[in-house]
Length: 386
Ligand SMILES: Cc1cc2nc3c(=O)[nH]c(=O)nc-3n(C[C@H](O)[C@H](O)[C@H](O)COP(=O)(O)OP(=O)(O)OC[C@H]3O[C@@H](n4cnc5c(N)ncnc54)[C@H](O)[C@@H]3O)c2cc1C
Image 1 (cartoon, helix red, strand yellow):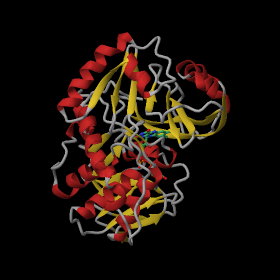
Image 2: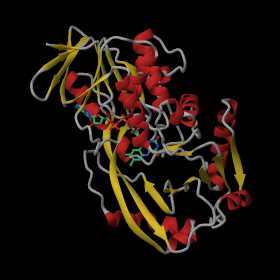
Image 3: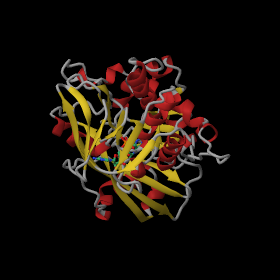
């Protein structure tokens, strides 16, 4: 029978960051990552918008992003392989939540917490918003919450950076689908693969993203996570904007940013949970009035392309679920990231690796995101969900 010390199910950004971090901490046992699709065609990482922000309302989310910022700033050099930089196209034009009068008190509260944790966020007035985006319609806005350190990056390259380094350090990536997580007497024993074979391990880490909750349910320990389709749109405008856009969130939740000369936009609409990758061009009609109102240059645009991807959406509090499951010894999860996994991946990988290898968090305290918080009725109530 095949055996490993640690099995990781899913080789996306979470699985790869965790595998890499285990090695960096000095764990030299065997690690096998099972990834069903090495092209990553449908993985959330490959379909992400890549937004990066420290603008959250809870300490755990702010500190996770702040840690990741330090990693992403030097990722290209630190993760270079054979003299070739691991470029991730990290751009920092800032991240901006636009606010109506009614929203300002909540942003003032967030600002105080963010600044106390070292984030250089600032509240902008109407006229300062105009300074940032001269074309912005500000008549119905009171201001905005802005962080100049934030922005966006190329998610696929981040994932490949972690994967290549993990492989260099001896982590084995196998192309296979895990169909069942296995346990006996309350402890993990391994996984069963689609070809019927069993691979044994005392530690199994569920990093299977939008597919992960189904595996956990089969194991008998359901998690409050569902796959939710999210659509992205890329358009071009005849009249170009004067300046590079920060990643901007309209009060309606519609968001947009530049991608070279073009603009990428998205919106978390109400959809039924399920695995669905169909991209509906017509759904853009729901966003377009908001976009055209907020930036008059967007009134005349050409919708060029787009895509659909899956959030692994946590239905209980929309935040990540990280740690060992209290009902199965050796069963670790990193799931439920909804729309903010890319900005958390470096800290999550390190935290999970510390928990598995050292038995406790050392660098960042991720215990608020523990599995048992649902049973404890101790949810992580984050106001800044996109
Ligand atoms: C449209 C969209 C926009 C987003 N925008 C942002 C953003 O702006 N900022 C941000 O921070 N985050 C964003 N996210 C979220 C972010 O991309 C995810 O949180 C993150 O990529 C999750 O990584 P993961 O490794 O957990 O999941 P994935 O990347 O999905 O990786 C899981 C892997 O597991 C594999 N797998 C699944 N089941 C099995 C199995 N049974 N056996 C073997 N392999 C299996 C899959 O093939 C997959 O490769 C966005 C996501 C989407 C879809």
